[in-house]
Image (cartoon, rainbow, N blue to C red; front, side, top):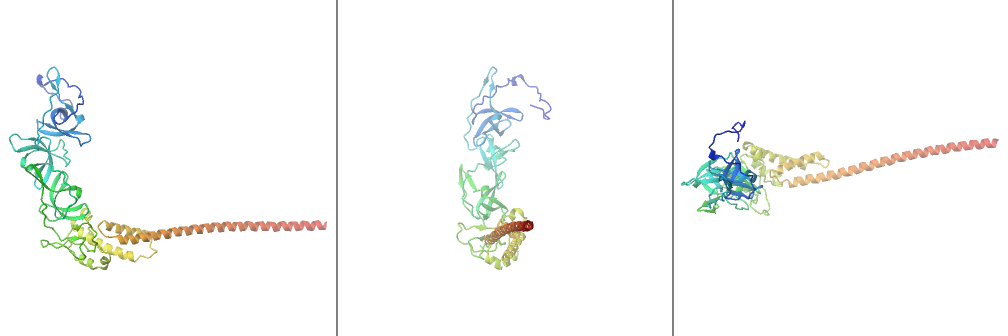
Length: 437
């Protein structure tokens, strides 16, 4: 061991009875629950007891509890050795200890009640003659802890076992749920279903949905009573806003007399082929009179829309969400008019730009099937025109090459003819000379 500044070995005067030889090398014996071990911890070997062997970890880890001071930590096998006692003449390995069978025995994963949340922890030990436990808080819901994890004494009424897994196919509007955030499960209420596997949830007494979460971060609330887990009855909370349902006819909005705000979208006729009556709750209250104007516009009657605007939750502050949503409604209308006025000589870059804009709107829940279909048809047409143009250019190039070859050939033929004429003249001149002689 070193001094605190780690500059040199720590020196200390001790009684002779506290000194023993160095133990033999660890023989690699199999360690299980109840094994007495030495754990290499804080620059030394500390005697402890294996209270849980975690087979699910890779590599396998062991939870080891210590008595003085009370603590529990997680170790790999290479950080442990079988404990040996020195009798004065030989080393003796102690017998394994029998662990308690209590639901809250040392090493048990539990959850601690803290206001409206449940926090993961591990039982270190029960306080003797008291209805309290010494526990160590975990860093995450996988029940991992570290040297810095806090240790507390907790009233037994605030402690329950780890909640078992309970499969839920999907959650419904106004269901009570628990949401995991870091290492804490918080109570909440489903205030909206954005799309499959994504929910809007409110916390505490507020009725306003404040966070968007995925299915994997939710679990149904359960009660631990008289040593048995009970599913909590499905009580419903009052809805915080008027909601739009995909299967309702155009113009219909679900009413709730307890509400002040209206949460709407431009409405649509959607076929009853939907498997579920999905509720869509926007992340803002529709207070602007422009929504009614949009509902009466011909463009939204021709191509009905029901955008959810869910990406605004993460990308835009609450004060700007409605304005951003209104801007997207206007953009959709303008883009659609622009698409209708396109001529066949439109450039590919213009079509690509329109396609990109409609794709961005699609992420906010706009139905852009028809616009994208027309753009893709025009792009296919432009591609076909481009191929025809390239083929025509190829043919023109071939014709030019052939024409060049023909001109060259004609030139050579003309040269040959001239040479033939010149030879004929030379032949005639020689014949005249011959006759004259």
